[in-house]
Image (cartoon, rainbow, N blue to C red; front, side, top):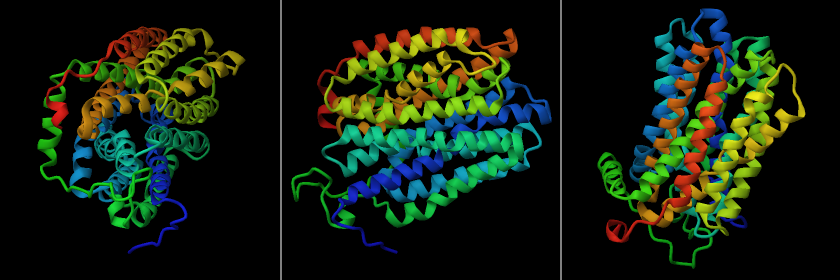
Amino acid sequence: MTVRLNRRIHPAWIVAAVAFIALMGAAGFRAAPGVLMVDLNDEFGWSISSMSVAVSVNILLYGLTAPFAAALIGRFGLRSVTLAALVLIAAGSGLTVFVTSEWVLYLTWGLLIGLGSGSMALVFAAEISNTWFVTRKGLVTGILSAGSATGQLVFLPVIGVLSESTGWRAASLVVSGAALAVVPLVYLFVRNHPSELGVDAFGAIPGTTPPRVRHTGAMSRALSGLRDAAKTRSFWALAAAFFICGATTNGLVGVHFIPSAHDHGMSITVAAGLLAVVGVFDIVGTVASGWLTDRINPRYLLTGYYAFRGVGLAFLPLLLSNEVHPSIIIFVVVYGLDWVATVPPTIALCREYFGERSGIVFGWVFASHQVGAAFAATAAGLVRDLFGDYAYAWIGGAILCVVAAVFSYVVKAPRGGVWAKA
């Protein structure tokens, strides 16, 4: 079925808008574990650390799927991969209502949602911007990267209210329904390449957009991309910094902020609302970062972002209490502005350094992001169970941010070789 698109608006912007909505729908689960872990602990008695392992499996698969998803997009196209991903997320969240043992949680939260969300990871935003746009790449990347933050903003308060009023099962079904609701939009409006609509990419000189090349051997392309990238120091510097980015966002704050606030006497709904405020300012920060990436050296942006994040984490143990004070509001605003602001400059550096294989290379850099998030999700849970609070986890995250700032400052373009011919 083909839907006639309004040519007064370049189709690239319509594809980007639907991609933004799809990322919102896929983000429902990203908001859920921090809220639902408290309810699951109350009902089944499972420890925070054991449930953190299930989240870590999800986060790890979310990252490790990304480079293969980029290769699969090259083979099957954006639309097919996105549709499959949304169905997996919906199935994983919906089946969670039947969970009665921890291993089922690993299957639903971990395997199904991990594979689905990994196929809708930030490589999706990179593919949209690289395929459909010649100009405004940084801005579009920033807007799409904010899609997950917008989803968090939408879902966190809903999940928090439902978990306290109706129960965690209703919240899981809402996440499942949201992912399914986006499927028709993706099917109707997302196209794999501008040539399918007979247009050039946005900002391209007419007639200069190359035709879509259907790649085969998704597995070998993903692995060869890693093999070649791993020969450069630039890749390892970007991957190490993004490892820390994932550890200090999705893994640490995303999973454990609500349980930590709850430890200090704050209600789940209020803590979820604060994390939603992070999502509000994440949108502003990420879009602004995309705009800045088109104008300022991405290395300098990343250095500043990680430094500010480290300062915020260092002060967090002093800010949490049973009430909402201005200081914690300042934290969530600053942390929100910084949350995914790292994505546009990281994608820009991958594009600059690794050419047409930047999508796959960024997939591997993003995989390191999720490995870091998985590590932090499990480590912070263990810290909580061992010491009775999260103070050491927050301080450890602050130290890691200093390391990420150093890596970001020293990263340099690879010296000649394979990427000139990629």
